[in-house]
Amino acid sequence: MTDLAVTLPGLALKNPIMPASGCFGFGQEYGRYYDLNELGAIIIKAATKEPRLGNATPRVAETPSGMLNAIGLQNPGIEVIMQEKLPWLAEHYPELPIIANVAGNTEADYVYVCERISQAPNVHAIELNISCPNVAHGGLEFGTSPEAAAALTKACVAVSQVPVYVKLSPNVTDICPIAQAVEAAGAAGFSLINTLVGMRIDPKTRQPILANQTGGLSGPAIKPVAIRLIHQVRSISKLPIIGMGGVSTAADALELIAAGANAIAVGTANFSDPFACPKLIAALPDELAKYQLTDLKSFGLSQEVTHD
Image 1 (spheres, rainbow, N blue to C red):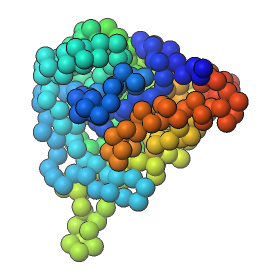
Image 2 (cartoon, rainbow, N blue to C red):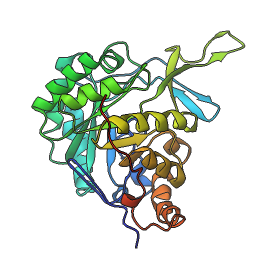
Image 3 (tube, rainbow, N blue to C red):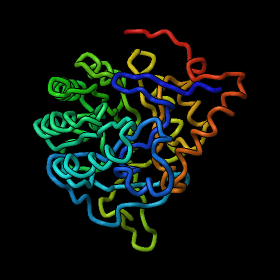
Image 4 (cartoon, rainbow, N blue to C red):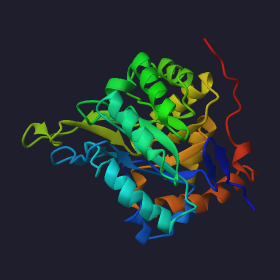
């Protein structure tokens, strides 16, 4: 038997695979296709204080080996999530670990949502989204400054009843000072990477395809960037990392784990194949067997953590 279990702050995962926030809604649609209990966990769609309609359309565009999205954190707001979405998950999947993605326009928004959503009995951890590139306020305003990221993290950790993982942005010159700042502020772990900022232009109109002009690039095209940044953060921190970025196969997942990730979130692959996560979970034992291994703990990159 292959041991795929992973234990992280607040999370006891039967396997390391979970859908990434924004790519799985609140699980209701995908639950029609397979038993979500097969997953290690689920990261639900971003929660904000007020409902958000998101950006104008068109807000999705295909690219070679990926896609651009500028959804803009569309969600029904914290009250609907607390009263409808989380209770549905609790009723149908009471044992499924849930990570709540939290976003906002201001520090006060983040703090309010973190405090409220961490009180839900089936929320086991928070993913603090300080790296969304598709909103005018919040998002990257907090994720590109070590000082701003640390202040926000400290404020959210202070009110949260569950561990707080901080979702870092790849759209920075150096990710390490930001990682170190949020670790010092009390983060329990990291989630990385979020999407890269990109653009497509329609040659016929000479105008951007997305109404927002730019969007977040995701999919296989960004996997090498994800691997580099996970490896960089692992080199300066021992905190757990939920790695993501271009994962669609078991081999991809193991590559991120070798770089330093402890668990894996799958995003864009869910759009092309709704069974992407369970297929990946089923393939992991055979992928490990190629290296004569029967557990994930033996696969991670052995690396001393250094501090500058």
